Amino acid sequence: MLIPVLLAGGLGTRLWPASRSSRPKQFLSLIDEDRSLLADTLARLAAVDELGPVTTVGSEAHRFMIAEQMQQAGHSGPILLEPAPRGTAAAAAAAALLALEHYGDDAELLLLPTDHAVADGQAFARALERARGATRDGQLALFGVRPDRPETGYGYIRAGAGPADGLRHVDAFVEKPAPEQAAALAAAPDHFWNSGMFVFRARDYLELLADYAPDIHTGVAQAYAESSRDIDFIRLAAEPFETLPANSIDYAVMERTDRAVMVELATGWSDLGSWSAVARARGRDARGNTAIGDCWLEDSDDTVAYSEGRLVVTLGIANQIVIETADALLVADRSREQDIKHLVARLEAAGRCEATEHRKAYRPWGSYQQIAAGPRYQVKHIRVTPGGRLSLQSHHHRAEHWVVVRGTARVTRDDDVMLLSENQSTYLPLGSVHRLENPGKVDLDLIEVQSGSYLGEDDIVRYDDVYGRADDTVGDAPDPDDSAPA
Image 1 (cartoon, rainbow, N blue to C red):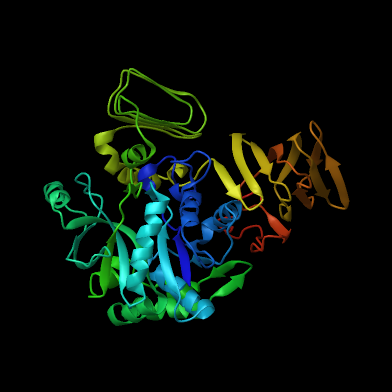
Image 2: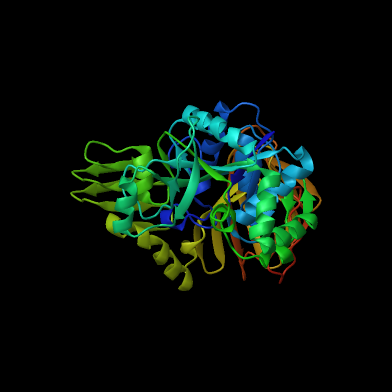
């Protein structure tokens, strides 16, 4: 059985400010405006026959975004939660252990990063079928892409001779070369980009991992054995997992084994590691511009513009990146885009929350976004999806007003339960035990006005939560996914 494994733990800081650690690029709609990159990855599987349940590996902080997007795409399956990012070697090992436990010794894994673009799903399915011919013989297959330009941000594979079925032995790996070397590799007929997508049997990978990286094998095995289950979530035990070295599949296994083979993926591919990569995958106009969202590029050339809300207008510029979000604007020369990651690190070191956090926060029941804030008050827009239900909670330092602007709200306030429709409101005094629910079939939108002496997100006492989140008490550090509204 072939088990797709979606690797959804990346942070994508080179695509800041659209991509941030609180909502990385795999959850954004960068290529197809109607679906995220994670959903694009799932759609690619439609051309593949006889697939088993999808397994997803991601972080605790993103668990509800993963679950929601999987559900929206019509897929279900286990979600492995990593206590900390430790690279693809550990993520693949956890997925392999899960596959062996549930699907047996012949389970094959198809490892797919969820932040890549593949132009032709049918070509991907054909390459996958060729790769599976090798995995049945105990080999580990990866997908190579013939370069169409020098690229310093990609790893390269030197492929040896191969049979007519398109499989070639992997002779060597070259990691992210300097510009001069990248030009030579791109021109060499035996060198390919390493796409980071793999196919192998779970037991073969674990066998080689035990030989070449026994510390990772042992640590992941312990973390998996001590994992806890919560609905579809499988939480790997923190202590053994967090002590693991961070390593990739390439370093830990593929570069050391003689069982690595490559199949060429003959279609457009990109790991979307920069705004220029997004532009190439999405397409450019006659002047080399790419516009995403509400953008108007006047007399401009070779520019990437992205808007999440406001109209972005450029005039007479060239070779620029202009990225607009609700709380940050980036204007950069395209020659400096590889420095965006370092810029974000400096912003984070300076204590700027915009480096990692979006103003709009996603929760299992919907989302909320800050509209305004000042001394002793804060205003938020709250959206609750149909059937969504916030936790039963109270606050020690703030009162709240709720005004419904769309949909129907079921409000619990101490011993009272009431239904509110558009243009109706309610007041929640300080200390009242309250809950918000959406019993309707359309989104519930309301405006929340908080007032009080302290408006910190740790002023919450939770009494009940249908999503299984840990209880918080005043003074405790809140769960990273439990910022109010909860």
